[in-house]
Image (cartoon, rainbow, N blue to C red):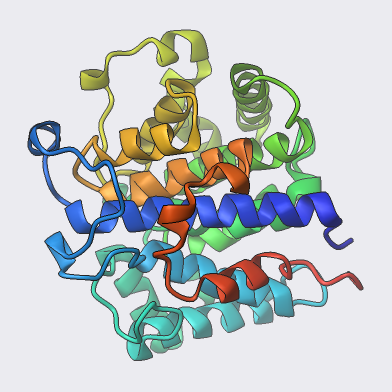
Amino acid sequence: MGFNKRECFQAVSAIMGLVVGDALGVPVEFKSRDELKENPVDAMIGYGTHNQPPGTWSDDSSMVIATMEWLGELMEFPCEEDYKLLMDKFSNWLLYGDYTPYGEIFDCGISTNRAIMSYGKGIEPVKCGGTTDYDNGNGSLMRILPAAISFRNGLAFQKNNRADLIFHISALTHAHARSKIGCLIYSKLIASMMYLSKEGKMEIVEKSLGYSKDFLEKHNVADISYESKEYGRLWDLKSFKELNENEIKSSGYVVDTLEAAIWCFLNTDSYAECVLKAVNLGQDTDTVGAVAGGIAGLYYGYENIPKKWLAFIPKREWIEELATKMLPHKR
């Protein structure tokens, strides 16, 4: 089943929300929270950490774009051979600068690099991702949004028949159960938000997390059920929302990134406020901005992403077109 007009709008809103959040964070990546309190990001700036022009997006958006193109080419739900096609795209990004703003890479996570190199050595795609505790960076979470949108029908509410697809797509670079769970929680939130768009943000997030918690507790794979405790702060959402900023971490650790993104969304009232809060947490600013931006872009809508920020994004029309073609109508 393909996108209807409303779903196309939602897809573009979410994807551009992610890309803009990513681009806002690129110039200040690795800056501390204290540094950003003294000189906070309040506009689309450039150069800084990676010496890139304003609006430049990072590896987060590049891998999202590659995934969108892949999803648009699929005729059915992905099988083993299809994952090779996606890893080919990731390889072309890493080796040749495909899916980048200006034809060159300036950032790539260690685990992601290692996984793509493993694929180049002939390892099966879903076995390329690392499986140790040290392989729980946010590199699969940052790119899972297109899959969440495409497989929404099997993820929203109590439906979980597409959970394994989310797990497989995570495992291409991050195969530890903790990373897979982070991708599933985020994906179910995105899917639920597409269906519950008229409800308040707290209600949407609370319902979605309830569906995730229920699924994870009942999942018959031991490491999935065990690792779900790492996300325990999210299960008591009201208490989580009230945490102080100094209790929220914004590192490259998958749990920290997901928590920071949801906390920023719950404690702000507009797209701009959400992504700026996320970026100004410091450290992994592009990815926290991207993950929060995907949620906020979907919830507030494309029209509420500042036009002056969108105007800086290179290849914007191409990205938006790919966002509407992730599910062929013949599927």
